[in-house]
Amino acid sequence: MDLIIGSHVSFSKNEQLLGSVKETISYGANTFMFYTGAPQNTNRLPIDDNLTNQGLELASENNIDYSKVIVHAPYIINLASDDSEKHNFAIKFLKEEIKRCEKLKIKNLVLHPGSHVKAGVDIGIENIINGLNEVFEYDSDVVVLIETMAGKGSECGKNIDEVKRIIDGVNNKNRIGICLDTCHLNDAGYDVSNFDDILDEFDRKIGIEKIKCIHINDSKNIIGSHKDRHENIGLGTIGFDTLINIIYNKRLEDIPKILETPYVTRNDDEKERAYPPYKFEIDMIKNKKINNNLIEDIRNYYK
Image (cartoon, rainbow, N blue to C red; front, top):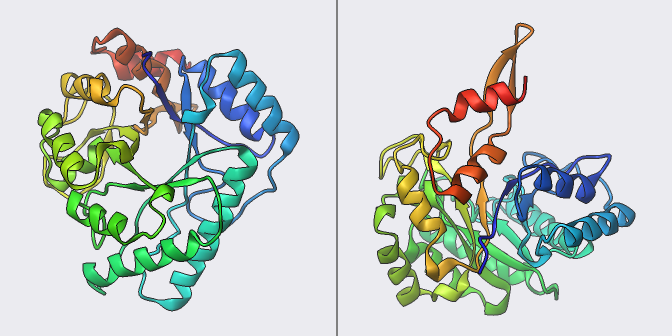
């Protein structure tokens, strides 16, 4: 089985899915993840079917398995909220995102489970379950992937048991899955250098077949910090070798691995600009060899 590796890419106004596929190809990737609009707000442009069809054709021509492509739901969706207005908004907006996925022919939608905001984790999880059950009353083939969280603030889903409670409460089990995030697992307190132990626990409590996506990120913080600050591959506390072992784990070989690592900044004309690291990080991953000049090489490449 070939490595399924990609990164977050843009979904722009002018090219939409076609532009996302072009960016993916430029990184040497064979999968990708995108937001269908800005993750922090509700602004959404209509999906252009012509650009979607062009994107699908270009993906097929470049050996991108579109069934492995991921959409990420916006951060503003908070199903855990105990504020009825915010909770109902989250349900409505998540339904709309699912419909956008359908138009884009996407099967997997990653979702942050949400924050209880002082209501308590039990109430937060109950709200998430109720919200998902209401969302899933809309019949669709799109699977919602609950992302494992770092435990920052009042985040729900910070450990396997909390994720299990959410999945156990969902009526339609065919509509729910899991997205692991290496930085989040580390920051939540899991020792990802013993990744098979984590997979064993997932398999016992939930079932490893529910894992449909893995976000590959190094971490700026030590294990158990609950900070959620991503770092470039090999430059953080998790380390290159540990991440390579996770990426090439035989139990996860059919699962897309998605990079969400930080852009690299550089001062251009007295203005700081940021550039994507993904082409270089994907090269490292494919070669299984760390590039100790990663940041400088990225800065020089975009001159």
